[in-house]
Image 1 (cartoon, rainbow, N blue to C red):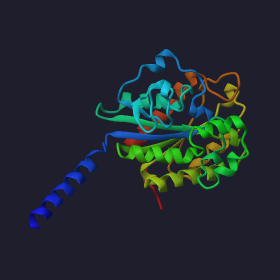
Image 2: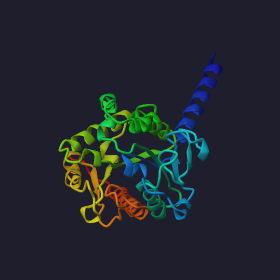
Image 3: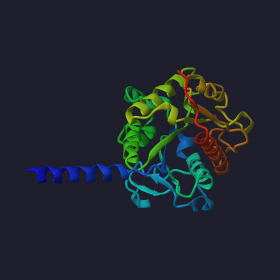
Image 4: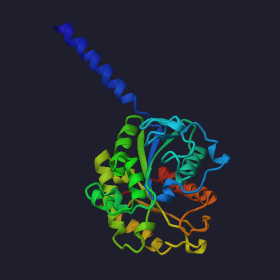
Length: 283
């Protein structure tokens, strides 16, 4: 009986040890969500498909035409959102980190975004009532996430936590909530739900939120930037990414490929600064 118990103890030790060491602390994971500018509206170009194999994306949907299965990691060649989306700030966010961090660090992103959506789509309790009011084209995109993009983001994030460590959250959303003074508190609700559902702490998981197309670039929703800039007043570990001089296209809503590259680089530079100098939370 004693030898049997010893054997069980050894097996448990092996199991626990293998479980602990299956998570790589040098795989930094970042969650990305929002509407069309995070989804990626501009077509990616040949230069965007040259990617360091330390930069990874976890597919949030099945893409047979790309050879991708939901919940698995791939080298982060665009598209990084759904199967036929374009270049996103996450593309050059990841590149910026890879270029600056030690060679033993890998970067993984998960991008769950829906063009045209309000922040209400990511409200875990009330999203269904919002989706019911949306047009059919938006419902079709939502259905690619089995009708619940927030739940899909959490599902993928939990898988990613088995492999690496979540280091931050990237948001680009707000155009569809232009003029909504309650937007910061709504974002806070989504952020806090993510922290709670994933067992994360705010002080170690900053939220980076990008501005809409600027007034100087003809942004039709540029007035929303005034509200976006107040987000750190509501979330102490929120940081705003400027869209100044990020080239836009003629619709006044979306960035060009070059604009996404510059915006993504700014997300990356801010994250590098936070990794080097994490903020100290005050109670």
